[in-house]
Image (cartoon, rainbow, N blue to C red; front, side, top):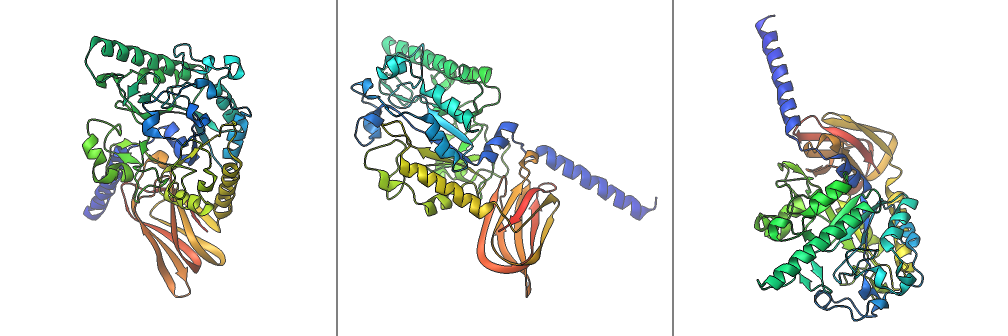
Length: 461
């Protein structure tokens, strides 16, 4: 081999080694995290005793004031099938239910918490809404999840994880009792209802190192493949930094710490939650962002629970589509807060809006003009005729990690190639919007990447 060929071979093998080293260092999602991002649209169904009191929800009051009579709970038309059917019409794939929330009341048959559906006159004390909810999810091919409130419990007098603010033996004993009860409730909820897709602990869950219940080993014992969100030991996803239904751009799926609520709280929360909103392209842990917002959040309202007289605050369709662009279109999963009413139904206006939302998503994105996929830095689409486009959708194969760092979308016009869009993060999905333009071809050029780009889909609309 002559000297020139030897140098070329050395360069080639050095390049391969460099690519291999880069690939080995890229954080990868686990299979459940990939399903989470593929789901794209998730719901949190919030239901609790105060839905039935005829008053507007008052969070500061509800966190410290027990409900006078738990038998106000009487949903005479309860139909969890209708809840899930309405959500599925929007294209929803994952749904969670507040098994417990700030009142401390449990929406199932608990053997360790007497403040549960066993105590009700409703259904002769035999009802189990968690059971009904999970059955409905499976009926409509929606993955079920459970939200568990540990941080607030007005019935037990728990405030910000603590049962009392003094250091007496009485307070310590009550804390121990509460922690053990929460562990047992977690065991009940994780073991009774089959495979669950996600568990969400309200405001996080203090681990034992912070004086809280030791819930992680229980969840991991019964639910091997669950999305866990979250405590100081583990977080599979992260809060996106606001309850607007949107995240910032760029929004990377990686994070510098293995949990989002930790001893590094000051760093995580500074600059208006910038790190939570944007993630970290150099982060060593795969932890994608979620974007949450209540459906009833229009005109200054922000309601996670049903309240009388709030029908005018259901988000307009245009607002929901902007949420979709600002969440799913920015590498995040959208969680919509849905509010069953005192009759036990999701209100008609909410149900209709969800159907409209699903139809709008399908109309916009089900039929691209053209698509391509594959490996490499350049991906080109040639139209069968000149088309006017204003959207491009780009997806990485995130099973190989987030590799792309910078990219361009260009269109071939009658005057030649023209820059349409310039971006950074792609991840699971990025939706690029630009002014309408007539093109005969479109090109995705990846100008910076950690390793060979893996494009799952490049589509134009």
